[in-house]
Length: 221
Image (tube, rainbow, N blue to C red; front, side, top):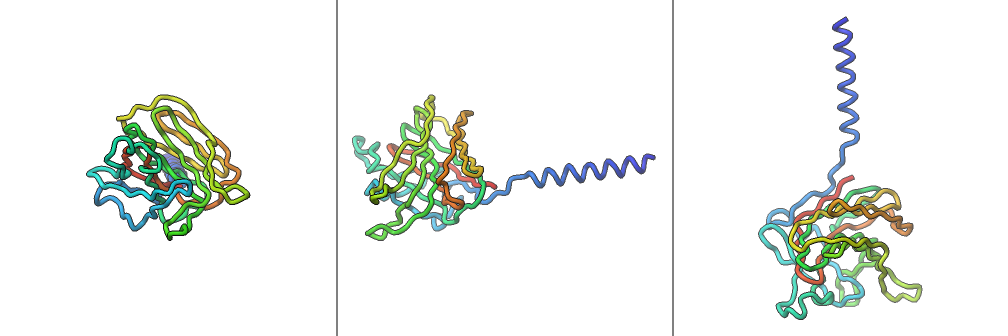
């Protein structure tokens, strides 16, 4: 009898272990933006089509920050401070992207890009894309696209207003499930449906409108 019970318990434990492994997230990318924690060659620095500026990242001891002008009057200007890049590998199906930011009065976030191509000067430039932006008054989802006439424009697709402080580090999580997108920061969840979201996308990070600190980046499936 004891032998039979032991066998049943063993089978139950195996089933639990199998279920746990089956439900575990698969890590596709996991890195920290420390001097030795990431490889810039694995990323593509891109240009927002509505901004002429192509930014740069400044490496710090525990993070990267977008390059900004020394002039305080220009430091928070979008066309003087925007730096944005995507990881070189596309991500298909459902995924969860996470990054940690410090706002510092700026507007950092995650990028979801359909594609990119060289502009007239040969600089990588986004096609249709989205920006999940946090700032001191909440979270915004911006949709960048071309009109039927070919003019590049953008619109605020989703937003939620709440207070975020400039100094703490905030982890932003964007979870894709089919055409649905769920964005989480500071315990607040904002969801939407994006019917035009393609099956494969590039994912990345950005900083703008002031000095944004970016600490890490993870993608799981």
